[in-house]
Image (cartoon, rainbow, N blue to C red; front, side, top):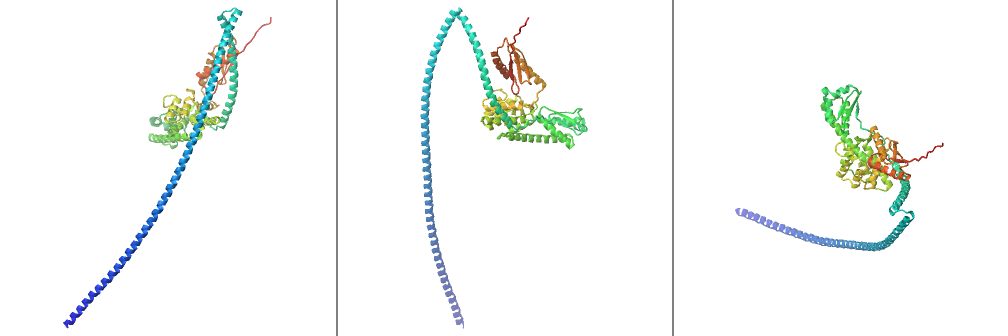
Length: 515
């Protein structure tokens, strides 16, 4: 029995070992088969990848060669075109050189001809001198006068003849030139004025604030005057509260400060709460409002005048001119009007309209700061234009618009003309009686200072002066020259809008009595 059990156990052990061996062999064969198939697939993938890479490489090489060929063709074409252009330029230069040589030859021929003419003129001058000498000798023999006496007599005759002829010639030439110039100038100016749509209303800054009732005056003054002192200190103006019913007068040299005070006071009146803290708050709001209004007015003026590209600071300075007047005429409206007139005149004459408008708009810009800085508004305007890099044409137009310097361009002359048109038209400006009478007196003093003037009268509000001369001292020929001299002296010594007509009147009378 024990032997049978051992045999069974041994048989089981042997069976297990055989089974394990067989299973291990089977798994080994399966694994080797899978590895072999995997290596084969890997080789195929690598071969396909290499093949694809080769094909891609060949395609890229072909594309690169095609691109290089195309670039080369383009470069060759460009080189060919440039070579042709250089050849054409060389031909043009050669042709110009030939033309210059021809012109130089023609100039040399003209110089030779002129030299020959000059020699001929010199010979004729010598002959004339000899003839004059012979004529003087004959005159001495005939008249029995000495050479000096004859010379004085001849000089007097020649002087009188030349004086008369020159006066007649000047009068005729002036009449013709003036007729043609006036005709053309009137056409241009009238056309420009008709096309100008500027506002012709004279404006002044507001300096009186209306009150709802007289009780408001006491509230504005405040306890012991603290409210009015605060308002005057904050704005830099004087408030005049007198017996005028329901009104407060704002007095101040600076128009901007006066406008700030006006707005602040109106806000306080509407609000009703008037005390120092509220006054400070309203003044700050008014200052911001005025600053915004100044910028807006400057931008609107530039747009209305058609001027673009101005520096922001220049626009702000332009806006300040809204609160500046000259003889009752608003400076900003005047500048816009001058800019529009300059543009229209420039278009009639074929000049640069944009530069003309720019010069016209900026010609009086110095008036915006002339109450703050020292110097004339012309010099201040020039300084502003130089600071903000304006062109030399604009700077010269600003500098020359009142004749302080000579205009260097036609645009500067147009600015002078447009400024005169804008300021001289009826209703544009108002003039004090003192200034008016002083101008008339100065005009009559200038005309009376000339020799031979009996008396003179300034008429038509100083637009014309009539000069009565002594007929024994001033001849008809002298009148033409005297009118020119008087007009020249008036231009040099006086400032006036528009033009002044000078009339010389000479009257000769012969009186006798029948007895």
